[in-house]
Image: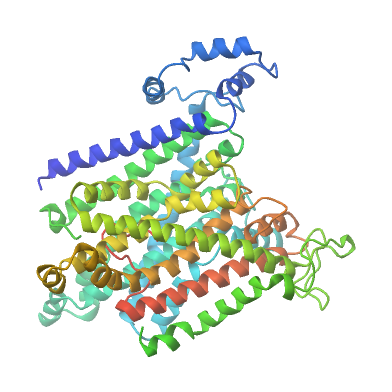
Length: 317
Length: 283
């Protein structure tokens, strides 16, 4: 398949994903409990309950009697020109709350993914090169244990130990690099276990391949073969996973952001949903989806162009 | 299943631990030392003692009794969610593999889309619409968690449908339904069972997080996630309220994962956490 077709396909898929999720999010006020007009009025004027006439006038003014798809088109146009509405709770424009939060979450998710990759490459290579012996068994047990740890139990316990008892690290907030240590540690756990297993099996496969045997036959030493042939090949499965996991962490950090009072997307969307602050929830979710789709597509594209098999259009189904 | 599988899987240490947990939680009303809701304010936030084997919470309730009773909710909601997403994933994966064509293409795109959406955000939205509670939890997590099963089922089914014996079966007049029952399902069942064990563990943790956030189980009912949320403000005085339900979730999830791993080893010699096919990158 020509590169341009792949690129075009990706772009169409990307647009469809953003459009579909925007529509789903747009529909929320129509199915969620509570009257959106009354919510809006409550946010804009401090006068408790609005009377029936005002409500109807506003509904007319905002075009709430128009067909659904007209309203969706209008909402979409406004959304992508930067007007995401006004928060029901704080009364401030949604853009101003949402954009800074995106940066915070991207930072935390990015650091976590990098740390997880570094740790799992080491663990995976060690396990694969000693397959079947005790280091391998130990690492395998660790990876199985890591995914079973509930982050909302380990996080408070770590805070208790390192922030309260030992006073080495701050217990919450987003002020210094030190305040990110526990959140990043907890966020890493699950990716580490999945990455390590992938690296281990990739390296094992690579160890048994013919080009490694050929390199060894030409007289390349064990370490040389490992560094130049086994590891570069064996890490291919890891690159595929990072994009998806990075995207997953963008929204999946809800718990961590709530526990550590980190002003990121996860906490923003969660608070908005709990407070029925629909404009903020909508803006947040659509931005999370856009980021997630962009990240997965970017990683996908890099992979498409670096893997000759994919480049010529071979399918692995 | 062979004879070896009986002792290797169903009588293995993690399986035995799980049997014990299930029996204890099912029999909670009879085996729990006291009423999970009876408050003795004079004995609040105690550590383990002979009177209260796992201590007491901020209202002086017996933690052991509460964790046994809470397990009934946690385990049953995780089981139902797992079964829901298992059946959804199996049906969609089989349809996609058997019908092929536009249905398959649509399935792959939908999969890509759901993979890009963070599952907890989708679950939050569903709960925002349906309101919190048992049914919402099952539905919210069920609709976002069927994709790994569907991908596994699809890739296995595609694999078996391209074998010579299925081709032969088709030539001697085997109907689609016959092939599905006699060739596809037996081939798919083992690895899917193994993956389902892993999924159960992951879903137990995810569902607990909803309760922890206060949008899962609603009072007066409680589960392991809500116990953790209740214990957190008092953790400095008594960390036992965090350790006990946290350990309960960990033990069950860990044992189920080990069980899944033993099943996978039996069926194809891989690790249960390994990606099963293209796009199967997230557990």
